[in-house]
Amino acid sequence: MSGNRIDWVSGKPAEAIATYLRWREAVVRADQGDLEPLITRLRSEEVLGPEARIWVADLLKRHNLKKKPGRQATPAYRTTLIEGRLDHQAALVRFWQGKGLSNKDAIRAALRDVKREEFKLEHCLEPTPTDQQLDELVTDAEFDLLENFITGRRGSSRRIKQRRRC
Image 1: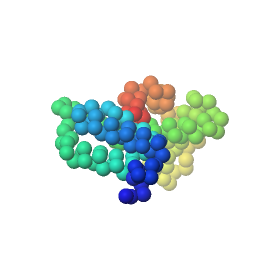
Image 2: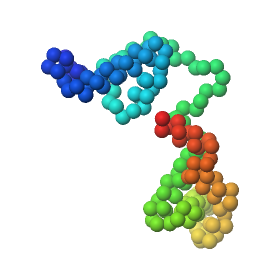
Image 3: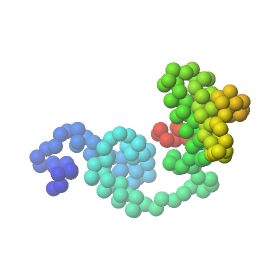
Image 4: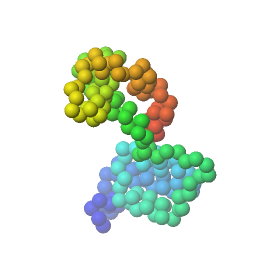
């Protein structure tokens, strides 16, 4: 028997056997139509052993994955251009917060950095504007959008983050 599989004869640890049984139960219930235990296992930190990998592959091979009628939910791995920009800006905000700036100052600094990069791309030969000039380019709408994104008050972003966490 393979070294990675549970060796029932020599008796591997009880924890490995319990994990094996949890995966087996989840696959059996998924085969009967209840996908929730399998989805929970797959999203957990629990190791997917060789037996469970074979069972899940067999389950997927035997069942046709059909889309439900109507609009499909966006997969967790897909992101929009706006979400990508906001994720980048949020990373800049976290950087500035790590430097000791308050939330509002960190948001301003992050938006200033974004505007500076945009300016460099559009006007590569012109001198970079000062921080004060960049602050004037940042609109209240951009500030509010980033602030709402960071605080979790932007609905679509909140739903995407929740889908990724599950």
